[in-house]
Length: 238
Image (cartoon, rainbow, N blue to C red; front, side, top):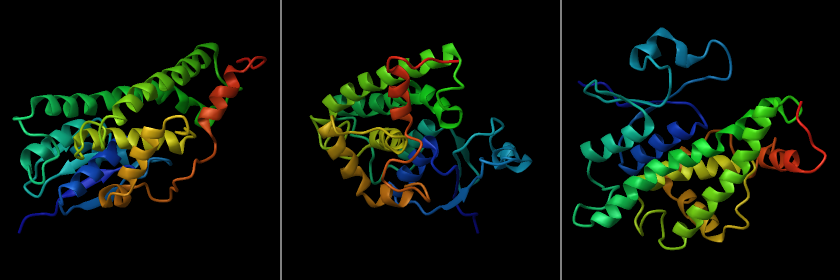
């Protein structure tokens, strides 16, 4: 008898979230194995987990046949190739749609990287920022606005982010958008993205994969409000 499929994940991690959604969209049975990283020792640093991924990062997919995969975008591609039904990519007969879905999945990671400097506000706040870090935060704030304008234009064209069908691009992008909302992002000025987020949120795969203990309300601290305050006249870094 083969072992059960397992997904090692970190609650609230964008990368982990992607894989949980994709596995559920595929209808794959798996054992979710949550890793705790907010206290020492981190469970991603245990010898057992490092044997699966020497980088000590989640997610990791372990298949019943012993195949081990890491890196979220690679796992999404692997799942599509190994379990083609139901499909999460347009067919080769639709090369334009296929190209968009693959490209947008990769671009979702670029959006997450643009946002990332704002995470420094989560623990440090604005007063402890060095001048370089302060500049990075302000750059991220404006960068996210540019990213949102790009994605808003795309969301106006199709029901989901790359096409009218749900694809791997949505598995990759939706957690980025929802994570930023959790950190204070408002979509009030982006009606197509707001409708898109609600549409994906209502899918069973997304609902089941939403981080444990989170609500859809913006949490505190509101990192976007903190970044805007940092940009206001009279606010200086240390």
